Image (cartoon, rainbow, N blue to C red):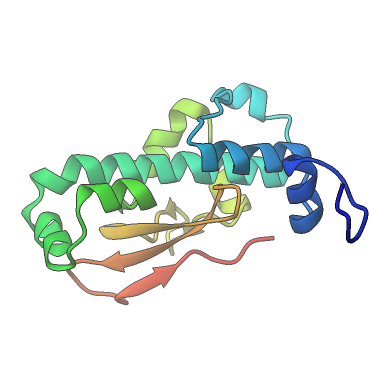
Length: 178
């Protein structure tokens, strides 16, 4: 008990009250701080029944994982990407720590998500991707270094992307969502 205010509790109740979290969110934060990986089911079928917000975070975390795996693959294979990071003094440890990524092309994520039965229409409905003039859903981050934007419990909220070569705006961000 606190002698000043009389409150009592544990680290979970402290985080829950201070940051207005539920128990599961507090548990994720504390596990992350302790370096403990809490495994969750990756089955999209299990996730289908969850609400839109949970579905959004599930999909965004899958996309972040895909971008990150792309960057790890291309970091040593692609001279332009390697030189970009070398010039910015960003090494593999920093890439891992911040889960930086790379988008290969406009459709690689869509192809990747097919194995989770996530359709391009779902990506558009959730505001993750846009449609081009011909009606196809595409990844606006194509050929960009990806900076995942995370919340306090390490869920991916969105992305920032920086072009490393070619035309277009130097930086773009994903749209705001609910």
